[in-house]
Image 1: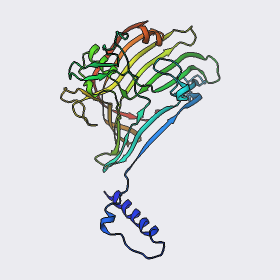
Image 2: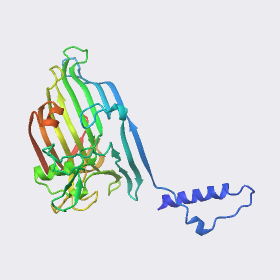
Image 3: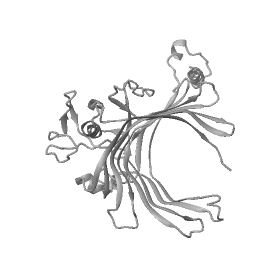
Image 4: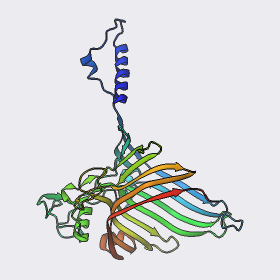
Length: 356
């Protein structure tokens, strides 16, 4: 690749220069040059916490009455401040989310970004006395026998990962009058760790056939950015898996326990082959990767045109509840059911432009 050849020549020249303190210049032999390589990508590890006091959107012309409308989001935060037991975990995490092993690589046709490992691996669940009615029975060490492969599988729960908190959403007029509070929104432990517990829910409750031996690992989705075939636009393929312990709306004007939420959600896609472009066309996939979106981006006649758009995904929500997230998690209090949407395929075109 030209990029590698250029780096090799540059590095060779540097080696040539600094290896000659007595000015006795000697060229490197071909065999030595063959051992010098440039690197084509980078790896990224990071940890962070983000807090935002206020975000306010003000409409340009409101409803035409002369008074603009306003939407305010208060006390927005991203990080890791809640464990999978719904307790405060900041003593160990300092409220920061860890993301490791993210990668950016140069391809012949563009750039590939690989998502990192978000958060911590799931805890081992001991379910030797059916303490958790949603999980398989394990031995005293947390292992159960997979009925398909016959292998011993370690039972692990969802990972301790990212929290997103919006303390309050307010809607009213831009002068502050007529403002009403809509409540708060919270996402608890959202990451890309694919646990055997999540696979068991998919198989045992919703009749899927996920490969249990392919669990207890991070699903590192890829984003590939390249030029379109005609060279006038950008082609984008992206995949992302999300396993979320809880997502709920909370009415902040009422006493505690006034939530409407979802528990133990999984978003992914089935594949027959472990490939970013596999969309389970044959319908026999038992392995999973992140939900996939593909599109071409162009600007045509003053419009942003998203063409050849496709999405492929499956979504499982183990519990829908009314009440309190922790009570629903621990003893199914307020749980009204669950839902699965399998092999959801969408395709279309979108045009975005300003209106008068």
